[in-house]
Image (cartoon, rainbow, N blue to C red):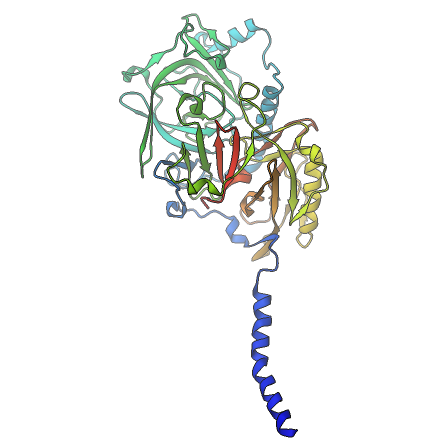
Length: 483
């Protein structure tokens, strides 16, 4: 008996380390799959460009650059810290304009008033001053023969591509010279009778019988004549895209009182006839905006030959035709914080519709949805010191994280029609307003009115591959990314 007792005690002693090791292994496993556990320093962008961190899916992909970061050609390797409160205010101005377009409200008076307004560039009328635009990402391209460099901001909520040209009555500053039509052998102004004077422009003629466009963005506008030209988009690593003739706007009167951080114009990617997508044979495009503006993203026009790339893309249908809406409409069905669905009826998300808009930074939610999101987020962040906003028109859920090395941020998921779940990255969840991390805020905004359309902005989509299928009438989110 005594010998048996000694043997049992010996084997028990041998097994103790195994038990302890197993217990420690259990503790070492992530215990919060519903949260992001991150170093606070990871919220701050590096000051050096890192193109090697971007996973480019195809040789047909074109590089996308943030106009704020060190990868920007127009910044010459310098970092320009974005003012997110200013961007928030510009987003709200843009949202108001989008709402007016969605509800087909006229921003000007009679047709005569509109005609006078569009003739402003030819008679020298001073344009309306505005606050600029919050569109962040651009691609370098060229117009003309020989090509002249232009840096075009990407916008899925706009139609016509436009750039500033010379002679210009009112132009903002840009890094590259103004496009000069007189130096291009392929430039041609579009007349009012031409088929290239598309219905998008609400065809209006100036006193020279030239087709006129007037594009507004809520916080700025561009007015000028419509022309055709050779458009070339060169990927410095891969291939080249050429379209000729390409219909675009010659910006002669641009009412933006601050420059676009060096950009020279905009490329429209919505579903209207004048957009880049409608004008080309590529009715499918995907893009990924980097989660840090110190790295680059990409945009791919057309589908690649590798079908495996699309196997895991989850698509939600676009509920409208291009004739009904030029935007990429979406239907949200719910949201969750840390794996718990918000106590909001599905109808609250969809009663006023929703769109995905790359030209808007911060997602704008209906007041009832935002209130539920804010409440759930605050509950999960109760261990951190909450700070009061500086004013009522700022982000209202902010924390002082300056004294922490590591923090736990609850994961946020958005659900779409078709059973699609989009889990946001941590950099699509919070925004850093102060470099010392004393003000880190929930990166969502609320609509000013309950019946306004929900707008899914690009901040929430950072590092996520987004697919737009023009023919299939659907929007998708892929497992690939560019973080």
